[in-house]
Length: 428
Length: 211
Image (cartoon, rainbow over all chains, first blue to last red; front, side, top):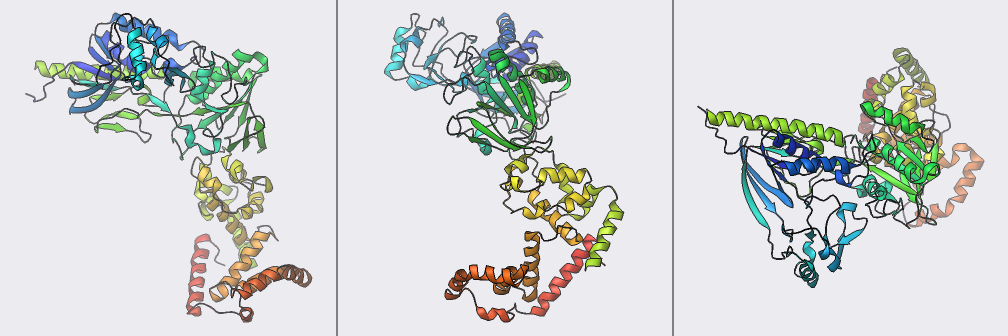
């Protein structure tokens, strides 16, 4: 009757952050075959780099652990790390996907003993701390890394450093001859959970992120507060390593702005409200947080959290989009200039540290979307014309973790429907 | 002229009653964008003249929405704008702030309720009257009129203070003293005046200033 013959019942999930893991696991737990590809050497994405979640202030490692356990218990998910999708052809129910697998230079014998890292002295910028510090060129990305397997940075392969790592390995896991591989797969549906990236703060010229060391992004602040981070959880400003007790948070840094991102990133208000509590946690009543905002968008039930922070005497709110930042050259303090909306007072206020609540934009580094994908005006994924590919989580819309998980579950259900439909067509 | 202004002013008052925003939207260049302002304050903070004038663009826009007609049209802030466009390039909603400020200044001027003696307004009037006379600006009469705006004594003082510059311009053949006798005009001066008259007629009709 129909010419459409499905060749595969498999669902491909692109991206191993919280959305991708959720989408993969939800489908797998329904008995579907899933291939989960992640371009980094580990799962967890940006979620694994947060210190705490709002509104419950719990640690992301908890949710990550639950998902990793689900993954280990499930035979239906095949995980491929350090893998990128380079091409997708075909249509709904019958896609041919080409994958590029980068060499890890460490095979499955690795026991994560860490002897290679001890042997190596070369260092590379640490992407898990947003480049705030350096790590060894033979590394385990973080404590919760899955797979628990070291990675050799390509920069030391073919150098004496690489040989040192190989010599140090007691189980022969270091394989410096690994090559990049190309793999072709047949799949029925694709879920793009490629996630987000922070808006490039250098583009917000008046805030001087590129010029002033004591102006940082909200993501860097997460790492400063995290005990696993570059400062061991102490809030020390990058300029001079001094304790930052008087901290300004600037909202809509890049969001809701026709010159930058035209959409509201939705998470940043709550992220800053949450981060004021890191300051309280670190300094008690002697810490001071000031939030400069246009409107606080603490959506639906988060209003509670906003009210809780409003009652906190160490937190004050200034209704104003900061016009510009200059640096006090004597002490390195950023000085914020602007006019507030509640009374039109002109201010020039000095702080120890400025945290830019940067917006979310879709991650495009190493992501090559097929032509069939439909994007919205901010380049978030709406779906595909043939109805066989879906966006999930923050690849589809600026979402927090909670809503990303909901979005991923929905995308998973859509993908299962595609597989079911092609399966019944095949049977007929 | 004054009566036409007054009747236009009274007409506008009658027509728009308490809705000053509607009046601005209908009569001011780019006035329909005023309602797009979200009161973030970046224009006010970015203005290099910011501390020196009474009402920042942010404040003016809120005053328009609040129906403060007399305060807005009587403000001299719009005349202080130097057209640096800093506010406009920074505005997250891309409001044409500079154009709106100029539009407001023009509207207030035409209604005859802009502040009297405001230097920018005075000089602009002087410039316009000078330029349309011959279709080109007569720099000599323009500067002299400007110097003598406050009377003979202050005029002589100001002219004396600038005499070395005048002499320099003369020696460099950039200033012709003969221009004081009216100066030269554009080709087809009659045609030029007809164009200006027609343009004024169209603008007056569009903005409801037909007396």
